[in-house]
Length: 102
Image 1 (spheres, helix red, strand yellow):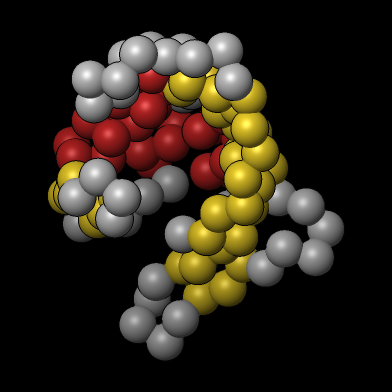
Image 2 (cartoon, helix red, strand yellow; image 1 turned 135 degrees about the vertical axis):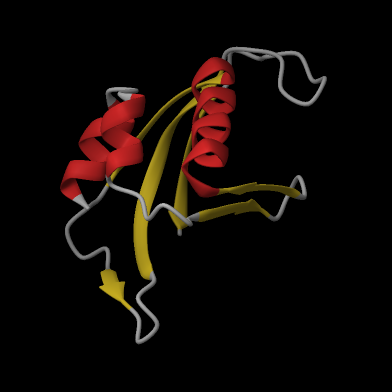
């Protein structure tokens, strides 16, 4: 998990993808977007890194655990803001901090 977050926060696409299962699935429930496999994950990360200035940090006490079927669930906090047009919406100067699980 540390390797993944370090690569993700550095926007190191190859390093981030290397931490993912080849058949990974990213699903954004808010937008209805779904990305499959490492190629899909690359599209997901490019979209986010182009439109958001965000870092993900684990705090003491936030959980990370595996499941019986091999999935990994983690809790972290997102810090940042939107810097590009996302889904047709113009960026704002607003910064936020939000808890997240994935």
